Length: 239
Image (cartoon, rainbow, N blue to C red; front, side, top):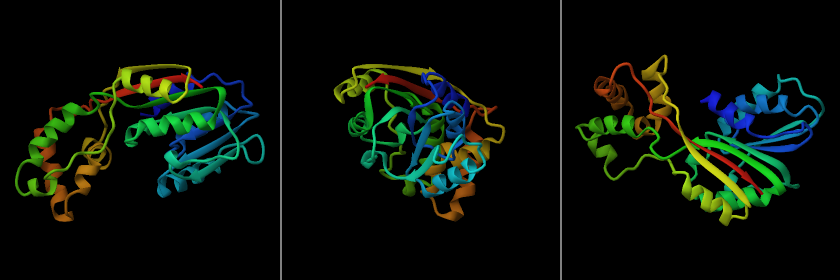
């Protein structure tokens, strides 16, 4: 997904001296690429995960920077984020689909952006991992797994293009463009990738003794070679 994150970054027009919010910085890979685009600017990188912000700080301390304070990594919830100044742009990659309340999210981002500021984002969109989750669901319904998944819905707010556009305009953005992009991926180590990333929430629902057997059974029902049916939602908007 890093390549798609870089696509979102490439859509962000930057002169090089802006203040940019990296909304959901993760481990800081895209943040490092963003810094290269801002030789005279600053990045405020925010993530809700303590482990991710720690990883980002470790990665970014080794990135050459043009001046003191050119990157700041903060632990925080985007829905509650307050900054001492408005930013010139917002970049977000692989984050928005983890947030259920997009009305509140887009309203907060608009409040953080100066008038005329730009938002460029990429996240999971409508249809994302539907096929793979459908195959995994066959295993979830079996014993001894079924009781652990009773009434449970996997996380993910995967929207189509129209609803986010309407919500962005309703939040005060004067222009917004949203579109879906199929992005299938064949992971080199599919079992590890699925158990930690795509089906990580599923595995975490199970007691330790059932986690490996569950993944054994999932791998047995998947088509080979394993392909993850990613669909990304791209967002460009102007405040």
